Length: 464
Image (cartoon, rainbow, N blue to C red; front, side, top):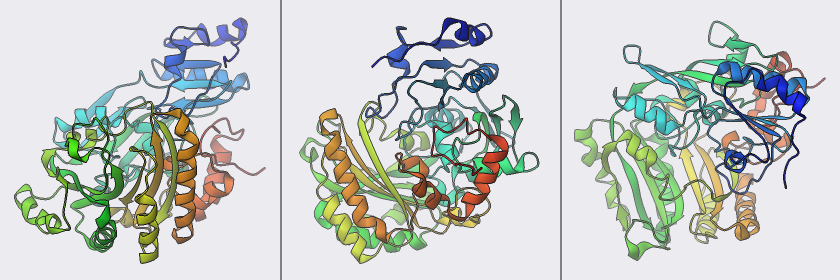
């Protein structure tokens, strides 16, 4: 499939005042430019506007709006549902916007919208600082932040949005505004969890925290011990000190990986750790953890925080794989749920398919559900079931496995799911994710984007 090009006269209206690259079907760079993290997505936009500056972003927004074209925004391109691309429309590609400035005295960092978290970690680590983000360093700053943002530092310092001081946003009418606690407060509230519904965020100002060396990494046990370990983990993480974080997952060790060859292809269950407390206490903290079951691989130890963030980038999840996601928030991990997990987690369809339980308690619970658009402040975990493989021929099999696993567990969940882990699943699912905050999101959407220009996302639809 090749998307038709835009009429030359129409193109002139943006080309005359655009500093970046305007990429159309037929251009040598077109296919590379439309590639995103999830290779299951294959979309063909009319135009990819690779923006060199904020003025380019404004020009591209105005162009799409004035010509009635669907509009998508590409930051890091990690969105599982492929919402960084759009068929027959315009893509605003922020990838050239790489500016990062750390204010060491204020412990803040200003980040442009094309950055990845690995680039932010590199900049802040030099000053002994970090911003809470996810667990894969190639993830884009914009998408992760706008959906909420949880990862290794969340139990200690909250969600990424809890550390967002202000964003600069290009609105649907082409205006650039700054939203914070004292101006455009309603927009600031909505952006923190409401996704890309309200505009294009060209830069973020974050609060950073003292984080340099952590004690982290995975410990893997045989799959036969999954039930015992999940029950221990369930009880441990509920009351663990905020200095310690661990996500639980089912994995098979990838064939050809640098991990011990004897483990390649084997099913296991893993807890991946991040301890930010005193390093001289770390071995004492981990001593009882190492007494659990019979670990087959223990990679936990002191390391720079960015090294932990990069650990799974290439080992498990480089760009270009087939992905299918199903997610839920979870309050309790009952014995019934553990039985379902062990059944499905013991039969992963491919070496790269997985299930992760990410804890979002601790400091995340210190913020009320009504303070940001992210509403699930009363749960313990964000769960994601992911079918992943290199081979497109396995796509149908991956989807069915993930759907069956999710369907078995969903009745035991809290109802909604993390928007950054959702495919395109319908309006009911979106409303269930925002719960009581949805009505307020609708009001903000109607104010800042009355014609729903920004609809290529987990869309908030205002009622007319």
